[in-house]
Length: 146
Image 1 (cartoon, rainbow, N blue to C red):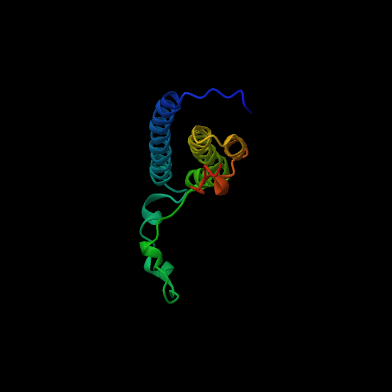
Image 2 (cartoon, rainbow, N blue to C red):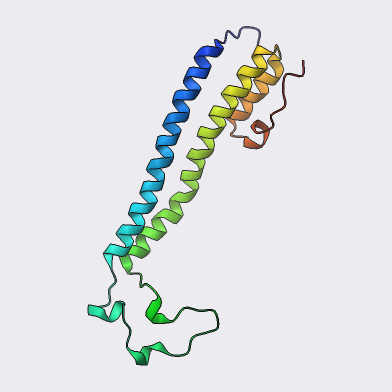
């Protein structure tokens, strides 16, 4: 690993730019969740007329302790259910994207700091941890032992 030639100012600049883009990604993901929720609500139900929002008194029935009466529950239709299932199935993928971005940023910063302190072995370990998305290893702030 003695062939490394890192320019810390360049790394810092790229980390800042990537961090800003990661913030844009977070904003987009939050907007996606909000829009999907609104779409599910706007899609309505398969129940005709006002029956979806105001059940008749005969449908009320007993309510278990701590439960919300049917007249106060929102109904979910097939489109809302499909959107919910879609997001559930994509949740792992979205978390993976977030974890990889975080690992890349932390790994680059930690490897650069280790490099500057002359600890090339720790720099390589940080680089490998980022590649393998080992956030537990990257969040350890210690370093520069050599």
